Length: 146
Image 1 (tube, helix red, strand yellow):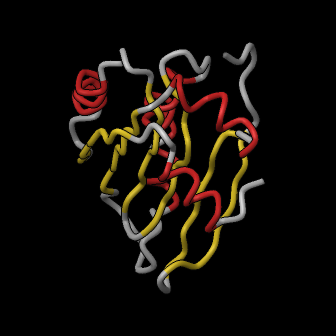
Image 2 (cartoon, rainbow, N blue to C red):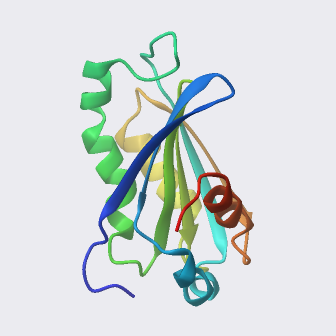
């Protein structure tokens, strides 16, 4: 996998009348074919934000307080051996982490660990089989990933 951390790309747009903020590691569409067999499952981990503005984005101080939580979710995938972060989106009062996983990764234990570490926050996690990366291809097409 990678020997160094990827840079992160950030973007925002309006979607269904609300701001949508996204960030993702700089994974080129050309890399998908090489990575897909290694990470055939998609974990969708949704964090319901407790303090949001009318437009669905988190309040500033609250958002700043989530740095440790975000690191807890993303750091295990930095070396791309257990999984690969596809996209992190903040939209309509939720922050959703889309993570492609290695077959052996215990997603249930991972989600439970996040819930246990941050008991005052609300999370839902679900794993989908997505060996063709249908989700990521669709996201890449809709938001013009290169």
